[in-house]
Structures are given as C-alpha cells and as structure tokens.
Amino acid sequence: MANDNRAYFHAVGRRKTARATVKLFPDGSGDVIVNNKSVRDWADTEEMLKTVVEPLVVLGMKKDFDLVVRTSGGGKVAQAEAARLGVARALIKKQAETRPQLKDEGLLTRDPRVKERKKPGLKKARRASQFSKR
Image (cartoon, rainbow, N blue to C red):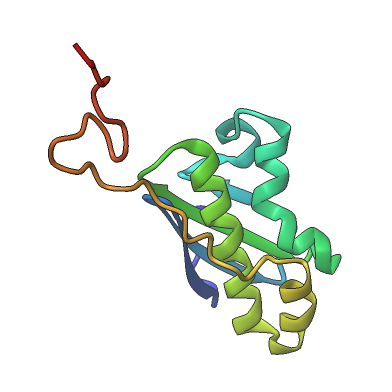
C-alpha cells in the first residue's frame, strides 16, 4: 500500500501544535499507516489507536477504507486527536451524508485550546513570583 497511485480523499486535522495530514483510500481493507508505520507500532496505547480510527468505527466503516496519516508537532496524544479530526473531515469529502452523525459524536469540532503565551514580568503565562510582604 506504500506507493500506490489510487484516488483518495485528503484532509488536515490540528490539535494544539500537532498537525495530521490524512489520505483516505476508498475500497480498502482497513489498513492504517501513521508516519510510515502500522498504527499498532506507532500508537503507545490502545486508546490512541482507537482515537485515530474513531470516525470510521462510529460509522461502521472500519474495514472499508485504508488510511495513510502523516503527523508532526505536539505530542503523540495530540497527534492522534489531530488524525481523528482529519479522518472525519476526509470522510465528509467522500460521503457528505455522514456529516450529521459525525457532528453528533463531536468528531468535527476542532479543539481550540492551545498553550497561553508567557507574559512579561511573570515566570509563566500566569505564574508570578511569590509575593514577600517584608
């Protein structure tokens, strides 16, 4: 499956500073490749593995598509969540009628939470140095 020139649906998902580019190949066998590794080799936990394919599981289409995901930035969990959003967006490009079901499950909402910037005069974004009265 590595270098095949089949037609695919492309989408991008993001979470914090992580980014995932997803290629969704219809008429597949359920193979999932993340950063040129099997998803089982890439994922640290079973939960991360489930996160990546969650949109397919919700729709009952896990064995109908092959996935190729490229992730970068952030941590592994954020990359998995970015991949989940990318997979959901790619599925909508393939079958627009799946949108309401994915939306009801909350799989199309990009999590907007990112790290707050450090402010001048403080140690971190909000952490000030300890106040000394005397």
